[in-house]
Image (cartoon, rainbow, N blue to C red; front, side, top):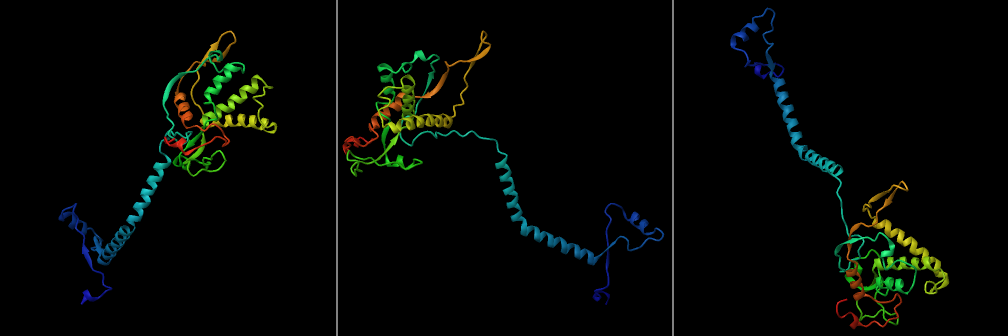
Length: 284
């Protein structure tokens, strides 16, 4: 009853597939060779199968988890090392239907070629006022446009400074005209410090107003961050580089923006103008 004895080790021969029967016999005929040398204990074989089966079960159990970790690592690596992308955003525009169209414009090299250059007088002042649409660029905007602004803006008010429920919409200031307004103020102060029309506000507000304009324009220039390249020439006599201002640029069609603003404009900051619902019946 040897097969019932659990402590009895049973050996099975291991077949040698690389050598023939003679080589197997000769290996057994070596003096002092153990006849059980080429045998594997059956209990070791059973343990090996059990261990492999357990490992395979564990691998199948954790395989989905490991695959998820691998995918996370791949996506994380791809995100970190992906090539830099250039993102172009129209981040300087209010959410209105103001037309944006581009055209090629050549900058003036010498200020004398511009009607906006020169001492502040009737001619140059009229040119600048024309740029400003004869107002500061305060326009009516829709409720939808107002909802997309980064900061809340005021409702339209009537001449009594009351919100008129019959007048829909909100008020907003087209930025480019505020910028030109500030530059025009600095221009007038530069050419004539004593002009009454430059100092036509409350005395306590004159300096803060001008200081605001300087700081506001600085922020605008930095915000837009023009990275266009200005060509340089060489001045042999002065032995120095000189800027070449007569460059062609792709610019927004300012006349289209100005005309749109004039059509939507409310002419004053203060709600002293009579505003009626009929003023906005055309969808402005």
